[in-house]
Length: 294
Ligand code: NAP
Image (tube, rainbow, N blue to C red; front, side, top):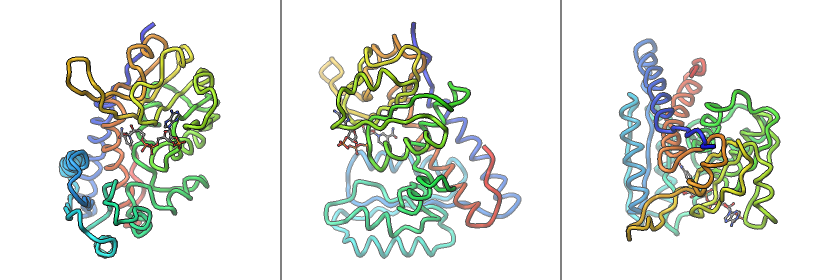
């Protein structure tokens, strides 16, 4: 058996197209133009590329992009001042502060300073709490992308046994909350979990968010399972150079799973598409407009 490949690139492009259409209608019918402020502190090359791609996607969607590039020496107080200014700026519907931040800045303080209504990353404690309580919230983008990808191959998630490997606040915990809201039975595994392979073998749906290249092997997979690979790892590609691989041993898992996301081209493109969707949802809520239908 060979798994169906879940083409995140195409699914994300479709979602971005729908968001762009909704942004067009918002501008035409209501005179509202969503805007997103992207704040980058320091010169982490990976963050640089990521922020550049985000800003490009924002502009392509018809939204306004406000880019702030601050030096690595920026103080916590100065960054909080900027966030406060953006909170009060009516042209800014969403605020994204790229992580990681330099060590003199406490990321939790910055996340808490963002207005929860503009928290398009979904990291603010108010949004995390609302998600845990099953209330409407701005939801973290990568977990949202994981669930949307799963729904392209599963008619319903209700009753499925889901295993999430990883318990970070950015991916593991919120993806588990979203899967619970979809009525799956969720197990969250982590570095102290005993006998991880046998827990994974129970999973109809396996989400790997670990950050360990190709750790999940073919014999960890229940035949026919849906596997969502969140990992982005640099690893040697055999020809003396390094390439990007996921947390899942793709070739092996491909032989057992029913459906599988590739890396690259799976979860990654969905993260940016979901950021645009979150910004659209945020602006509609701020203006008292109905939530966009996607
Ligand atoms: P993280 O904060 O480092 O969390 C990793 C999680 O994996 C932790 O909960 C850790 O357990 C667990 N873990 C580590 N080693 C393990 C092991 N041997 N067995 C079982 N669990 C283990 O990472 P993250 O931010 O969640 O990101 C995870 C991966 O997703 C990374 O590769 C990252 O680059 C990628 N990512 C991709 C996107 C995207 O857009 N595609 C977005 C975000 C992240 P403990 O809690 O016990 O330490």
